[in-house]
Amino acid sequence: MKLQHKFGLLLSSLSLFSFISSAEAEPKVVTSIKPIHSLVSYVMDGVGRPDLLVDGSSSPHTFQLKPSHATMLQEADIVFWIGEDLESFLETPLDSIAASAKRVTLMDSDQIELLKFREKNVFDDHHDDHDEHEDHADGHDDHDEHDEHDEHDEHDEHDEHDEHDEHDEHDEHDEHDEHDEHDEHNEHEGHDDHEEHADGHDDHDEHEGHDDHGHHHGEHDIHFWLDPEIAKTIVSIASEELSEIDPANKSIYSSNAANAINDLDQLIDNTRSKINSDATYIVFHDAYQYFEQRFGIEVIGALTVNPEVLPGAKQLAEIREVIEHESVNCLFSEPQFNPSIAETIASDTGIKSAVLDPLGAELEPGRDLYFDLIGDMASSFENC
Image (cartoon, rainbow, N blue to C red; front, side):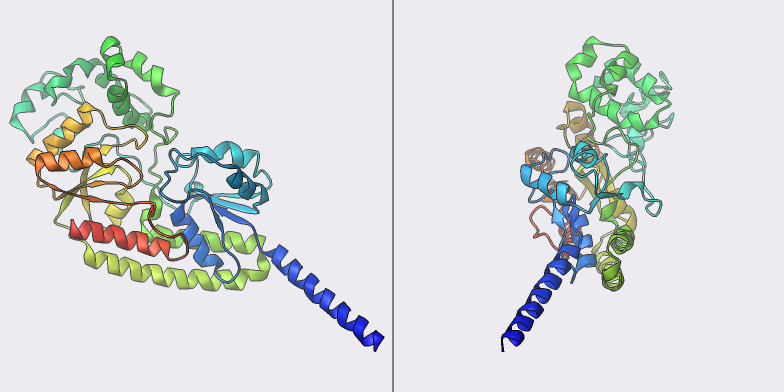
C-alpha cells in the first residue's frame, strides 16, 4: 500500500514537472504596436499570447517605456517591431534590455516592398499647383506669374512665402531626397528662425541632426501594415520566425497562418466593396498611402507629414487652398492627436470631418483587432 502511494506521488510529480516544462517551453513573444500584436496573436493562437508594448491610445511616435515593459523585453525570446523609423523608443532597449532576444525588424524584410514618403503635405501626384518637381503650375492662374521667374522655386505659387525662395532652391538640389520632406517642417516648425536666416543650407544643416520628422529621416513610409496584402506577408514572417524558435509548435503556427491569410483575403474583398473611388480626402498625417494604393482611394493632402509637430501656418494655408479649389469630401483626424485643428478647418470650409485610426486606439488587443481596424477604416471612408 505504501509502495502504491509512493508510486502515485511519483507519477503526480512527473506530471507536474511535465506541465511546468511545457509552460516554460512557451516562447516569450513581445510585439510593439497593436496591429502587429494582432497578426502575431493569430499565428500563436493555441500556443500562447504575445505581449504588447504600445497599448491603449498611445502613439509609438511619443511612447515611453515603463518598468513593466522593460520586464517584458528582458524576458523576451523574440521581439516583433516595425523598425527604428517608427518605434524609436525601442532602439536602445533592444540593444541592452532585450539583447538576448531575437529581433524581427519588419521594415528590413526583403518580402515587404516599401513606398517612399511623399515629401510635402499637399501631394504632388494629385494637385498640380503644389507640384515641386514641375516647372509649370497650371492649376490656378493667380500663381502662374511666379513660375516664369524662378525655375528652381519649389514653393513659388505661394505669394506670402517668397521669403523662403533661397531655402527652397537648395532643397530641390539636395542629393538626399529622403530629407526633402523634413525641410517643409523646418520652414514651419521654426518659422521665425528661418526668417532670420536666409541661407537655405545653413537652416537645413541646423536641423539635419534632429529627428524632427519622427521617422529618423528615413525615406520610406513605415505604415505598411495598413495594406492587408502586406499583412499576409507579416503573418508568414511571424509563422517562420516562431517556428524557428519553437519547432515543437511549427504545425500550429503554419495552420494558423494559412487560416489568417484566408481571412485576410476575405477582408480585402469586403473592404474593396465599401470604397468609393470617386471621393477625395485629406488626412491628419501622411500614413495611409499603402491603404490608398491597395483600394484606389484618393487622398490629396495631409495636415502634416510629421505627427510629432503640429502643422504650421503655411501647411494650413495650403490645405485650405486645396479645399477651396478641389472637391474634397472629408477631412480626417486621428484619435492619437488633438482633433481640434482638423475640426476647425472642416467647419470653416464646410466639408465633413471624421476619424481615421491607423493603430486601433479604441480596439481591444487580440487576434481580431487587425480585421476590426481595417474594417473601421473602410467604414470611415465609406461614411464620410
